[in-house]
Structures are given as structure tokens and as C-alpha cells.
Length: 428
Image 1 (tube, rainbow, N blue to C red):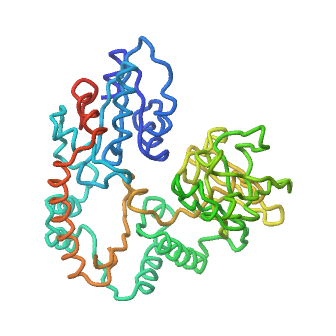
Image 2: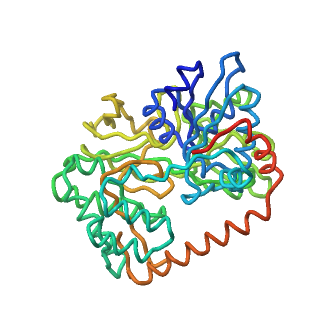
Image 3: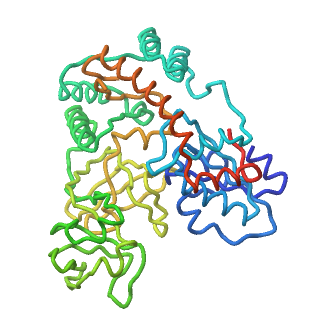
């Protein structure tokens, strides 16, 4: 599709909700790639050359962003190709625009043949899950498409996942996904996996003790209130405030939070204090983090957790630690394409780094792997197989009912998006 469009004179841009997914899509299409959010902020100037914007994982796009996407496409002479599956994960923000565009009559082509799963049993399990038949899906997995490991306690389940993961070769681990839904669970499972890798001698003996920045995920309203901050929190800004002494490259530590006056005392990296009134300025451009320990060893799988255009890093970019110098506080990380980055424990931009052994379902969506280890409680490594089957079946029913109910309550933004869909987009 992309090559055909280019031959017809179109400029092709690959877009996705996450930076890592956009990069994968761009590499696959050999075209310019960006996140949808950044593209909507800076789509470039309209030109006489027609454009094709290919948006992957379209089910994750909110109604608000979809309306803006189609409006921007119209002003830039761009056609939009939406690629996705409405039965997969939906948008975190309000709206199910991709589904509602299809319900409203958007021209749609459906790919009915599954290509990603090459194992016949795994493919059959996926087809059964798409039909909402959890019992059949699990039975097919038992016949050769995978296995369901039933272990009662969470600690024991994590220990088994860690054991199975560490038993893989280094090459096999590169092609394996481990999925755990909760942040606390991901941290615990990561510790178990690294412990097993260390025991097996698959991580280096020397350790570099660093700290990482972990987002507090404040809402826009919370970011304006001093009570949302704690001493020790790190604040970074997406733009410069030269008159305030703020640089987008700096990291500012919260020294004190005065809830009564709604003012925060921030300390810059050179020790200079400044007063910040988040309700008056900067809150909309601020990202707030807490510090957590991060141990790095040779062999560790890591990922960057913040976009850094100047350093050519995107959120989710993966790499492997190939050398460390604990005396200097440095680590060398090999990225895709054999690019080498030197990480310093003193650098703010380098502390947007984490271990990359365990993912959420959202982070894993769209990625291709030979193996997937997923922890699934009764609501694969599970505490109770029969309850998990019932839970999966019930959730499929709830999802189906929700789709019908949602169609009766379409917001204004979604309605505008549908009106533009007929001449602005296609769906696959």
C-alpha cells in the first residue's frame, strides 16, 4: 500500500499512538514515522503534494484525537489509512472513534486471514478468542499452541515465569514478551527475572547502582495543585521559561510544597531554589516523576521511557547493556542498528531508563514475538484455570454489550469525525 501510494506521488507518513510502535511501522514501510500526538502538534505546512497518513493501532485513538486527525488531514490534502482491530485494546481517553467510524459507513476493508501466528494451534486459539470462545481457545493451547500453567500463589507464579524465561537462550529472550498488567507486579516480576538471570551467570557480576525517573501520571488538574507533589519529586518542563530560570533540559527537585499558598519550592541541578506557582504557569508543560533505584549489569535489557528528539531516543526504544564502569557511573547501551549510547547516572536525560523484561498489554500491542509469557489471574500463568476461563467468557460478553450501548451515545467530537471520514479515510 505504502509503495503503491509513493509511486502515485503521495508522501507517506507512518503514525502510531506510541513512539516505539511508530518506529516499527516506519521501518516496515521504509517511510517517515512519528507518534500521532506529535504529528497533530506539528503536522508541517500544507503543500501541493498529496499525502497518505497511515495510522496503526487505530483502536487506541480517542474521539478527540481522531476528530483532530481528520480535520488536520483535510487541511493538508492528506488521505488517512486507519489500521487496527476494534476487538483489541481501546483508547485510554474517551471515545471509540475507530469503531464508530466503521458503524457510520466508513469505507472498510477487513483482513480475515491471520498472518502473525504461524503455529496452527496458536492461530486457532486466536481465532477462538476473537469469537469469544475462551474454553475452545484454552483447549487449543493445550494441544500445541502453548500451555496454561496453573499455580495458586502469585509469588510462585512469578517464580515459575522467571525460571522459564531465564532458561531461554539470549537469542530466544530477545524474541520473548512477558506481560503483567500492574506496575507493582511488573516491578516484582522484573526483580524475580533478574535474580534468576544473575544466578545463571547471564548478567554481569559488576553492578552499577543508578536511579530512574518514574512518572507519577498526574492529571492536568492535579499538576496545578501543590498537594499533588511531595518532597523529592522531580519536575521537568517541555519548554523553556527563560524569565523564570527554567530550561526544558533541566530537572528540578521539589524541596517544599506549600498547600495553603499553592506554591512549590524547586531546586535546580546547580542548587538554585525558585518558587513555582503551578496554577499560574508551567503546569501544562510539566512532567512529574519520582526517583526509584535502578541496578544495571552487563546483559540487562533496558528501554528509554521518554522521547528525546535531540538524543534520537523515543519512548520504548530498546537496548542491551554491553559495558559498565561503576567507578565513573557510566554504562554503554547497544540499541537497534548497532548504535551505542553512553548512559551517565548523573544525567537527567539518562535517567529516563528502565528494565525492559516485563510489559503491559498496551505496551506489547502491535509487537511481534516468538513467545509470550502472560500472567492472568482469575479475572499463561494463572491461579485457577476454570475461573480464568469463566472470567474471560464474561468479559467478552460485557464487551459485546458495551459496544451496543456505546453506539447509542455518540459525542459531538465523534460525530464530526464521522462526517469527515467518507472522503478523508479508509480502514483496514
